[in-house]
Image (cartoon, rainbow, N blue to C red):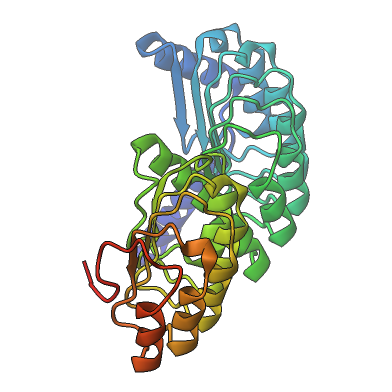
Length: 354
């Protein structure tokens, strides 16, 4: 008979404990807590699974203790848009460089408050992981002129769709943005493509800084990646470009010949791609590369017609090295190359693989 009584008391205890745990921290308790935390480290305040609610966020915003804080993290704090408004409008948070509002209740409205805040100009990291932000909020952030220093924006596990992904990926205002998190949102093909393009642009920047942009062999950037490369500011005046084994097609060849940034090109490596006779004809007709000396087309899909087009091209007369090994060229194409009136300066055998 006593067991049900003890069980009932146990359930009551659990219920009372749960209700107590679910209540936001009262301002007095929160004040003592942050004072203790900031005494240890005045530049970083991390509130992990502390239920502060919107009232607690307002308390933080009004506290002069926050003036020294550079990193503020609120994880599972039940902070919604009203709390974000208080934080965004606070003059005590102008030193913030990293703001983490993770796993809270922020919507598009809260994102707008952040985007319109005049006090977050020093922010480098804005982490809004697992909230309720959609396209409208993403557009507010993308159009913000108040986040000039932002380098990292995390919107993983939100409600962003293609429109928001596109706006963020090409934002003219977030010029320093290097990392954009959009995993587990509502992206379809167009949004994912925009995000992929953004990430590839950042990779180009890394290659440029490493000094390896001229040698992209085996990077498999594809025609789309090549077009982004050609639109970048990093290759203007480049003299050597290795694009071997990059899954390029004739479309990529056409993009190369149309680029005004490659006029000083001396060496172009295109081995191991998917270039056909059409691509060879495009190369043969191009007059863009007056300084080109070395052209590597080994391991492609060029046949007799492509070889004949190259042989008849006066635009390639300055070539010293033309490599066409492991294509689909037969005796007819080989004869045309050997008897070419234009390819007279070749130093290396045409069908060498080196």
